[in-house]
Length: 152
Image 1 (tube, rainbow, N blue to C red):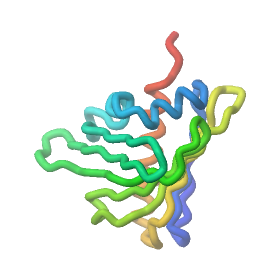
Image 2 (cartoon, rainbow, N blue to C red; image 1 turned 45 degrees about the vertical axis):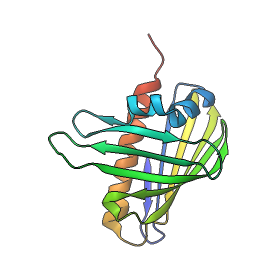
Image 3 (spheres, rainbow, N blue to C red; image 1 turned 120 degrees about the vertical axis):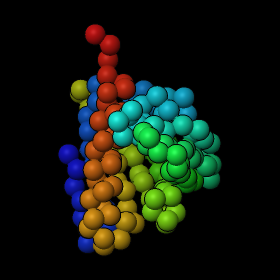
């Protein structure tokens, strides 16, 4: 479920996944894992992940959409690293003019595994922009859940 408050420039996306907070935290921070799940062949693929996992450390990746030569970049800096409970980082995307926003990810243990809550703030009052990020975070959380689902 995703909620958008365009007036405050905030997107909130939540999903529950059948994995421990430790497992989810690793999937969100390990560059090798991020490259496996963040993206799809139909939408875009991410690569060249950097994750210097400490407050003040950098995080970044490149992405390419199918059939396109140009790259997209997302970069930022970790603000909070509290394994396996929380991550917070700045978000600067090339398609958004590298304007700085903030993403907080909270991982809460629940009976089914982990509740993952993403709060992306600082998006301004542009409803279309916030809606695009809401759609994006829904997609990303779906990819995450698909990546870490338990083997049958």
